[in-house]
Length: 126
Image 1: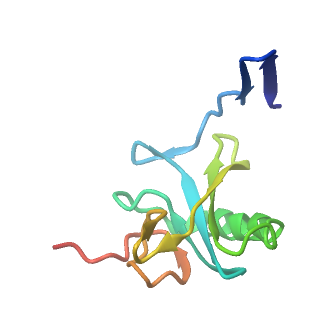
Image 2: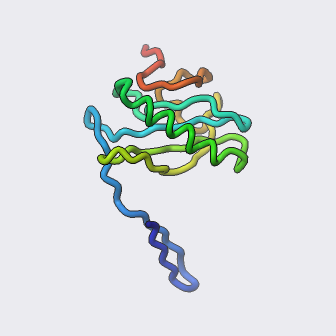
Image 3: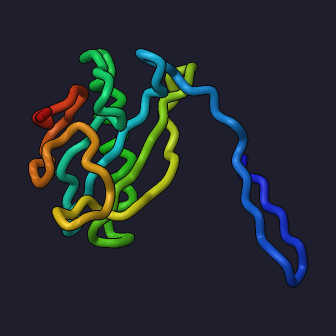
């Protein structure tokens, strides 16, 4: 449930309840879906500093399915999701697309090479 407060002539406040996340390697399990020109390019584990096992593929794919419902709202964007400790996938927020000149972080993908499902870091380290 979303909580909405309105203080006349001052401010609107929207709050959401705290979500107890599923954790792996001290990080919450989160995914980012990348949409470019109305097409879903791929989905990534949000944290490139830790790897997720293949058991999380189904949740990454579920985040793609949810994102399909958002297609048509804007041509290019990212959609972030979190997995709760009860294994429920929740939409967190939408953001800017990943662009070579900036925008959303590419997470586990190499810049400009967003494709498929990336549960582990695909970027090259110096």
